[in-house]
Image: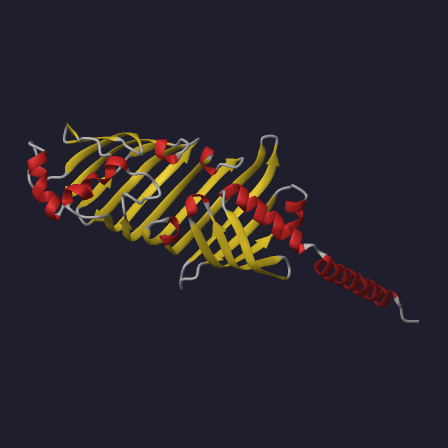
Length: 305
């Protein structure tokens, strides 16, 4: 007589697969994705300080969520429209306050403009602990009050609590075609607008800018900085910012090599007695960001109101 044991095993395995599939389908249909969306938005608002409104939401298996036409309203009147945000999210760990990971892809309205990255979170006695790694390309800066393009940005950070800068991290950026009106800048520039005034131009115009910084416990260290502008090129291989609230009260300590151009090159010998044409100027900047002391080739520049 033929044994029925293999048939029983196959039937049992089939019932198991059916049960798992039925559970997953039931779980997906009944899962409260709207509550998850609200939770994600609340966390994002708490971290960014911005008000976030999503136009529409959709979900796809296994647990991928997508928001479209997302509007950000941030402090100081800055606003930004995001075409779509896609996340692969570990939902249960997030809802149960355990460790989880979210992979994010953000598409901006402009073609080729996007941000991708991942963030992990876990609970500690001091609050949420976060780890972030990401990069972005082709982002317009107009929504934050600066005309220009963020060609690339790469960074990573580890921190606890709501303020990313209280942890440890690094950042590399590249910008192009930047135009800043010193009188309307989102960050008060104080006498840093002096160069444009002396050169007879209305705004700070930068064709390219590249920089690398690291930070730890609200102190930023500049590892590399160079910028090519309309009236001068700037180069620095070191500097430090100690952050305070508001940002304009942050303390800067930095040394720059300045290579004058155009009208500024003609005017520098009239202001700096020991200046030799075609040699870089050495600028030492110290003090609050809103109005730091600027010493160029040993001569202190007058404060600008």
